[in-house]
Amino acid sequence: ILIDSVEQEGKERLLKAATYATRAGVAHITLLKWGNIPATILQTADAEACDLIILGSRGLTGWKRLMLGSISNAVDAKASLPVLIVKQHSTGVPGAPLWRRVLVAMGDSAWSDAAVEHAVRLAHAEQLEVCFLHVARTRGPRGDTPAALAGQESLVRAEARAAAAGLVYDATL
Image 1: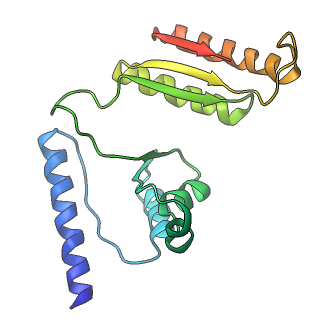
Image 2: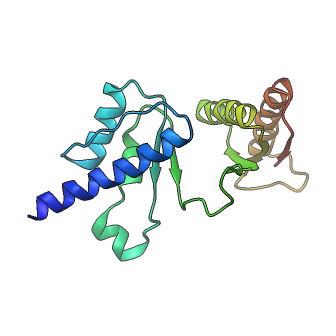
């Protein structure tokens, strides 16, 4: 009976999501699977040729996080494609944009370059503003430490990418 209850709840959640997608005019499929949750999410993303995984997060901390684990963290750690973790559901006006301005926290690495690329594409598609941030661990008296100089270079690259896409942006070191 417990298994039937869990499966019924899953079907109800899928129906709710499908109804929302249909009303928004979004093509979709629904799948209900049993298994190790992070592994099944990753296998399904691969099997369905997905380009992005979006997960909700309850924001567990401390003891609960240790005992219950974090599905979103496990998926993010093992995924080979981008993962968007959503902390809370939208409480705004129906039809209003979900976001207005996004922060891209970056460093001087290929991973940061990928984050900039994804953010710029998302911002361009959704007409969002972008704020680029590079945080250096230490600063010299003139701000000219190697980390600060590398951060400045990564911000210049990000600004150039945003300007080429015609975005509103700012950058902070």
